[in-house]
Image (cartoon, rainbow, N blue to C red; front, top):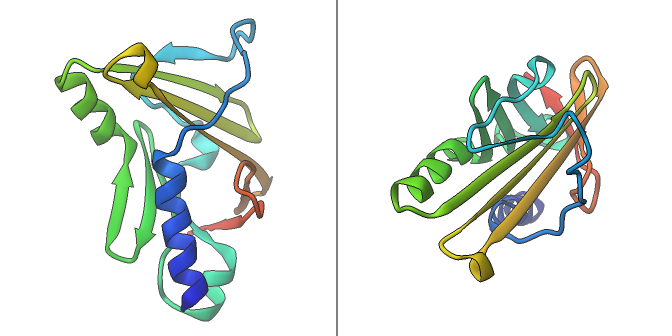
Amino acid sequence: MKNLFKTAILLVIFTFSSCSKDDDNNNPNTQNKSSINPPSWIIGDWNQEFLEEVSDVKNGFRFTKNDFCVIVSSTSMICQRGIIQSMKDGKGYVNVEEEKNNTEYKITITMGSSAPGHSITTYHFEKVAPNKMIWKNHHTKAVYVKE
């Protein structure tokens, strides 16, 4: 149960932490916008592999055609689309860059109220089997299974 709590806390921290990003301005697969459009292979719910074996608690990610959510418990999610919309409604700066192909999805979300105050968060996922992916920028390279 301690590990479950630590994992949930880490997910929340990674959601709101600043991360560096690569300069992908020359990559034609990079899209600059404020909407989220994950590739079709990743659409659905993904639960951390070891958790499925020990409990019914969900901890992972949910991808829809226009959103990306962090599942922090069986009853709680933090969805990026809502956070982005709130930032836009408050006249804040938002930029979403996505790189996607048949096996990888990388999303970088930059937001803030002013240039020095920008927060940059990057998530990078790699499909390793039809129903398994790795969260690549997670320090343990956690494996997630598609429901």
